[in-house]
Image (cartoon, rainbow, N blue to C red; front, top):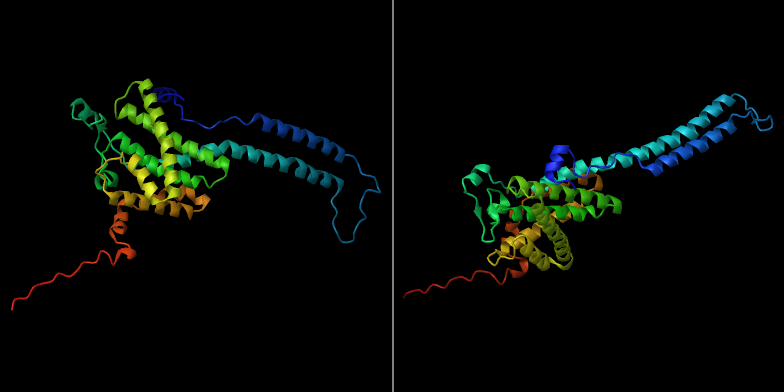
Length: 321
């Protein structure tokens, strides 16, 4: 994998799909054409009188030349066109997947976007957390409503949360398509993560960036396992996974916030499950238009089973005689 500076200088696209036609497929096409040429030579031989069908009245019968011409078109051009179409699909499919996953990823990455200006860095106005992580300028639901700091860690985990929901739906595709789509989606994330380290956080050392990217990859694998376990075992386990990863196991996290995020994740998975495969690449990220903060309305509403427990008791007023 080329570093960011090499990609900019050489004009490389990360993980650009292969452009050469598969050699084995080309050999198969050549062998098929040779076999069809041999069959064509046999057709050019003039058939004997006993082999010719009896003429039928009032019907047009193609001549020997027309039959040979039709046979050539059927045996040569149609199989060749089918094989060339297969080659074209295999060659262009990675380009289509690359563009579609890029659009899907941009929606995921925009949810908790932040920035650190060069002016603030030169003036020494960049604040840091207790762990030494730089705090930028953000805004939006995840920063304002849920109290997450506009840092690289927050951006990465919010982005991975949205990516996870899409990956769960992509698993419903066939095996090869699922691996291709997920790989391209994850590659977009790691390339932008390295770009943020370089541009936003002024991390010029490529060795240091690669070290952080390795740690980030381990976190991504852990997110997949933790959220998968929560989806299978129940909302309590899923809320625990969200608390550990997204909120860094902070003790001051509001439980209402955890419940809202879990409810929002379930809603997104339901909407993605109801979406057709053909519409997933275009309308898949549209499920994120419903903000997770709106789930607080449902969280604050008591369940029906608790109506009789939390009813307000009327106050007794003493009357003076």
